[in-house]
Image 1 (cartoon, rainbow, N blue to C red):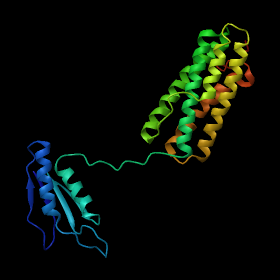
Image 2 (image 1 turned 90 degrees about the vertical axis):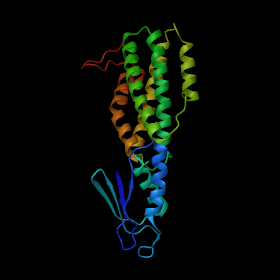
Image 3 (image 1 turned 180 degrees about the vertical axis):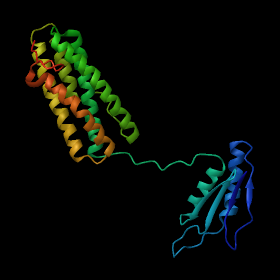
Image 4 (image 1 turned 60 degrees about the vertical axis):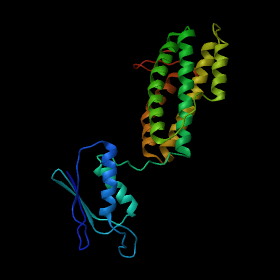
Length: 248
């Protein structure tokens, strides 16, 4: 049984709403009851709103909203939903825009490009070092991009579906070098450049981003991206696992 009380000299009698019935029936009854119970709108210190104390008693538990000064429609809607056994929806946050959104879009495109070029190297390099580095890039950028995509969804940011045009051009050029000795140096130099660009994006977001969650994601990813740059620094393949750097 749900009871709604509105204490005061002009309060209506207590009203009860049976908890049974379908959702639509409960909603209709709650609307009718809330309208009768809410009473007229009266000012509080010159401000329009619902005055008094609204107490919702549900199965022996009492919730006192204390003094309210919100638009009557908002209060009634909240009461209706609560009494009908429905969840009161939270106000939707505005989508992230500006530099934070730009960071998510650009770092996502960077991840797509890194994954694609690393997968190409996995199949076509003859260097053990490059193969190991490519394996690391695929693993880490796939994980990082999953975080970026989840964050973008939660922030209302629509991400590009493909890498940037220049990044796609780089992949096309790499594919033209399959089986040639210059594939390795071109791949390594491209990775050096792209990871420096990724670090610059991350550092900018960490230092000046407005959204705390996006900044935190960028900060957490930085050590991994820096490790990747170390692996291809100067266009030379370095084995970053362990204490010894080998060049092959």
